[in-house]
Image (cartoon, rainbow, N blue to C red; front, side):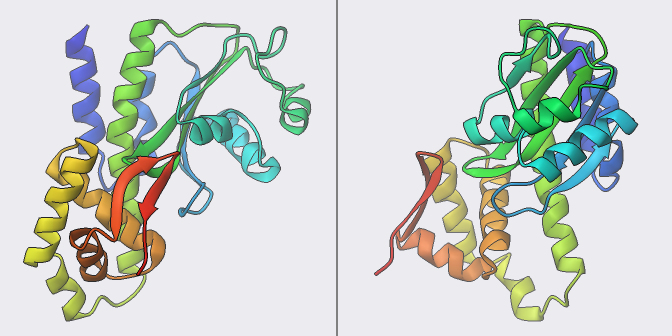
Length: 239
């Protein structure tokens, strides 16, 4: 039912600035008992952004502490992870994580990666208390909503980083310069994404490497930095 999906997309987008509630549209759309949205990996700190309940929060904390679990596999492979019967017939064995959840009332675990272009941001973890499958429609819907969440979570990280430090006048000007606009067009072409997403990719990379938008834009224009993905890495060359 596309109307339900469109409604979930609109609700997610409207939650910008209140990211702790991002789990809500998923619960109204998917046959799961709980879920969490977290950041970790390449450049964002390990943090649970949104969790529907204590069990979801616990699953995140265990995976962060142990460095293994479905969310890590989803982010590493860039593909969803499905464990429809985690207790009796697991597809994967995570030694420490599997041991840690023995006493938990879990039937199925699913994880979807959060990414934007080449930027790996985090994951969405979902669980059910009994063995369960996600239908093809559920998978498509979750993947589509994961794209929206990726934008919101990355925007949140950039927003918080700017509020934590004084942003000088020169930095503010950089966001409207011609070079940034030109670089955005080049990234758009490289990744086949929208202009807004291309700009967000540049901002995310800028945030990750701790440099200015102007510097990164110049490298893109000079073709010293390309966001075309090569084995999950950003292609970069230095003189």
